[in-house]
Amino acid sequence: MLDGIQYAVGSWSDGSTHASRTIVAATTTPPTLTATFEPLVPPTAHITPLAAWLNTKSIAVRWSATAGTSALTFYDVVYRRAAWNGAFGGYTTWLAGTTATGATLTALPGNTYCFYAQAHDAQGLVSARTAETGTTVPPDARSPVSAGPGTVG
Image (cartoon, rainbow, N blue to C red):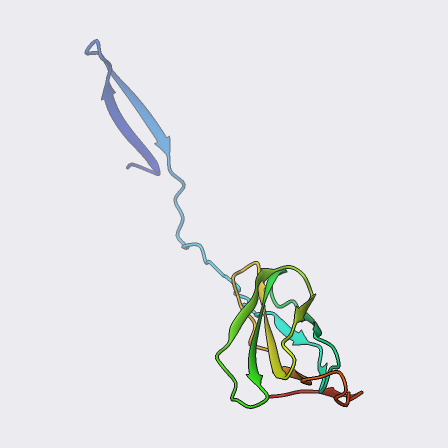
Protein backbone atom coordinates (compact mmCIF):
# COMPACT_ATOMS: atom_id res chain seq x y z
CA MET A 1 0.00 0.00 0.00
CA LEU A 2 1.36 3.38 -0.97
CA ASP A 3 -0.28 6.69 0.08
CA GLY A 4 -3.61 5.03 0.86
CA ILE A 5 -3.72 3.23 -2.48
CA GLN A 6 -3.48 -0.51 -2.70
CA TYR A 7 -2.10 -1.94 -5.93
CA ALA A 8 -2.58 -5.42 -7.30
CA VAL A 9 -1.18 -7.00 -10.44
CA GLY A 10 -2.96 -9.86 -12.08
CA SER A 11 -2.84 -11.78 -15.33
CA TRP A 12 -5.42 -12.75 -17.90
CA SER A 13 -5.83 -16.23 -19.32
CA ASP A 14 -3.99 -15.16 -22.49
CA GLY A 15 -0.88 -14.33 -20.45
CA SER A 16 -1.17 -10.54 -20.61
CA THR A 17 -1.01 -8.61 -17.37
CA HIS A 18 -3.22 -5.95 -15.90
CA ALA A 19 -3.03 -3.71 -12.90
CA SER A 20 -5.80 -2.59 -10.62
CA ARG A 21 -5.86 -0.26 -7.71
CA THR A 22 -8.11 0.23 -4.75
CA ILE A 23 -8.24 3.41 -2.77
CA VAL A 24 -8.22 2.64 0.93
CA ALA A 25 -9.39 5.35 3.27
CA ALA A 26 -6.81 6.03 5.92
CA THR A 27 -7.93 7.04 9.36
CA THR A 28 -6.05 7.83 12.50
CA THR A 29 -8.95 7.26 14.93
CA PRO A 30 -10.56 3.85 15.14
CA PRO A 31 -14.38 3.91 15.14
CA THR A 32 -16.15 3.71 18.50
CA LEU A 33 -18.95 1.20 18.81
CA THR A 34 -21.67 1.74 21.35
CA ALA A 35 -24.48 -0.67 22.15
CA THR A 36 -27.41 -0.47 24.49
CA PHE A 37 -28.91 -3.65 25.82
CA GLU A 38 -32.41 -3.84 27.26
CA PRO A 39 -32.99 -6.62 29.77
CA LEU A 40 -35.48 -9.27 28.69
CA VAL A 41 -38.54 -9.21 30.95
CA PRO A 42 -40.75 -12.32 31.12
CA PRO A 43 -44.54 -12.04 31.18
CA THR A 44 -46.47 -12.07 34.45
CA ALA A 45 -49.28 -14.63 34.65
CA HIS A 46 -52.52 -14.17 36.62
CA ILE A 47 -55.27 -16.58 37.60
CA THR A 48 -58.75 -15.68 38.85
CA PRO A 49 -59.45 -17.00 42.37
CA LEU A 50 -62.06 -19.76 42.57
CA ALA A 51 -64.86 -20.07 45.10
CA ALA A 52 -63.86 -22.29 48.03
CA TRP A 53 -66.81 -24.63 47.31
CA LEU A 54 -68.74 -25.34 44.13
CA ASN A 55 -72.04 -27.19 43.98
CA THR A 56 -71.37 -28.32 40.42
CA LYS A 57 -68.94 -30.65 38.66
CA SER A 58 -67.99 -27.86 36.23
CA ILE A 59 -65.03 -25.77 37.36
CA ALA A 60 -64.65 -22.61 35.24
CA VAL A 61 -61.02 -21.46 35.39
CA ARG A 62 -59.83 -18.10 34.01
CA TRP A 63 -56.28 -16.82 33.53
CA SER A 64 -54.45 -13.97 31.81
CA ALA A 65 -51.02 -12.36 31.67
CA THR A 66 -49.26 -9.04 31.42
CA ALA A 67 -46.67 -8.99 28.63
CA GLY A 68 -43.02 -8.36 29.48
CA THR A 69 -40.53 -7.52 26.72
CA SER A 70 -42.37 -9.47 24.03
CA ALA A 71 -45.90 -10.32 22.99
CA LEU A 72 -47.70 -13.17 24.73
CA THR A 73 -47.93 -16.38 22.72
CA PHE A 74 -49.58 -19.08 24.85
CA TYR A 75 -50.36 -20.46 28.31
CA ASP A 76 -49.94 -23.71 30.21
CA VAL A 77 -52.51 -24.56 32.89
CA VAL A 78 -51.83 -27.27 35.46
CA TYR A 79 -53.85 -28.77 38.32
CA ARG A 80 -53.55 -31.23 41.17
CA ARG A 81 -56.37 -33.09 42.88
CA ALA A 82 -57.08 -34.56 46.30
CA ALA A 83 -59.96 -36.88 47.17
CA TRP A 84 -61.94 -35.99 50.31
CA ASN A 85 -60.11 -38.77 52.20
CA GLY A 86 -56.64 -38.47 50.66
CA ALA A 87 -53.65 -36.27 49.96
CA PHE A 88 -52.95 -34.25 46.84
CA GLY A 89 -51.47 -36.19 43.96
CA GLY A 90 -48.90 -34.92 41.52
CA TYR A 91 -49.48 -32.11 39.06
CA THR A 92 -51.31 -32.80 35.81
CA THR A 93 -50.91 -30.60 32.74
CA TRP A 94 -54.48 -29.76 31.81
CA LEU A 95 -53.88 -27.32 28.92
CA ALA A 96 -50.49 -26.98 27.23
CA GLY A 97 -49.76 -24.31 24.64
CA THR A 98 -53.27 -22.86 24.69
CA THR A 99 -54.09 -19.35 23.51
CA ALA A 100 -57.41 -19.44 25.39
CA THR A 101 -57.80 -17.47 28.61
CA GLY A 102 -60.39 -19.70 30.19
CA ALA A 103 -61.79 -23.23 30.15
CA THR A 104 -64.04 -25.54 32.17
CA LEU A 105 -62.84 -28.75 33.82
CA THR A 106 -65.34 -31.50 34.65
CA ALA A 107 -64.53 -32.47 38.23
CA LEU A 108 -65.10 -35.60 40.29
CA PRO A 109 -67.44 -34.96 43.25
CA GLY A 110 -65.78 -35.19 46.64
CA ASN A 111 -62.46 -33.78 45.38
CA THR A 112 -60.47 -30.60 45.81
CA TYR A 113 -58.72 -29.13 42.75
CA CYS A 114 -55.90 -26.58 42.73
CA PHE A 115 -54.80 -24.79 39.55
CA TYR A 116 -51.92 -22.60 38.43
CA ALA A 117 -51.01 -21.01 35.09
CA GLN A 118 -47.86 -19.90 33.30
CA ALA A 119 -47.55 -17.57 30.31
CA HIS A 120 -45.05 -17.81 27.43
CA ASP A 121 -43.92 -14.99 25.15
CA ALA A 122 -42.47 -14.62 21.65
CA GLN A 123 -38.88 -14.57 23.00
CA GLY A 124 -39.41 -17.97 24.66
CA LEU A 125 -39.53 -16.47 28.15
CA VAL A 126 -41.86 -18.13 30.66
CA SER A 127 -43.59 -16.42 33.56
CA ALA A 128 -43.38 -17.59 37.11
CA ARG A 129 -46.22 -19.86 38.17
CA THR A 130 -49.26 -18.09 39.52
CA ALA A 131 -50.26 -18.80 43.10
CA GLU A 132 -52.54 -21.81 43.18
CA THR A 133 -56.25 -21.24 43.40
CA GLY A 134 -58.44 -24.08 44.51
CA THR A 135 -61.98 -25.25 45.00
CA THR A 136 -63.76 -28.25 46.49
CA VAL A 137 -66.60 -30.09 44.79
CA PRO A 138 -68.76 -31.69 47.55
CA PRO A 139 -69.65 -35.40 47.33
CA ASP A 140 -73.34 -34.59 46.83
CA ALA A 141 -75.54 -31.70 45.75
CA ARG A 142 -76.82 -31.08 49.31
CA SER A 143 -73.41 -29.86 50.48
CA PRO A 144 -73.14 -26.18 51.41
CA VAL A 145 -71.83 -23.73 48.81
CA SER A 146 -69.55 -20.85 49.73
CA ALA A 147 -70.10 -17.51 48.01
CA GLY A 148 -66.57 -16.15 48.47
CA PRO A 149 -63.35 -16.73 46.57
CA GLY A 150 -60.62 -18.87 48.08
CA THR A 151 -56.93 -19.31 47.30
CA VAL A 152 -55.20 -22.52 48.21
CA GLY A 153 -51.40 -22.55 48.32
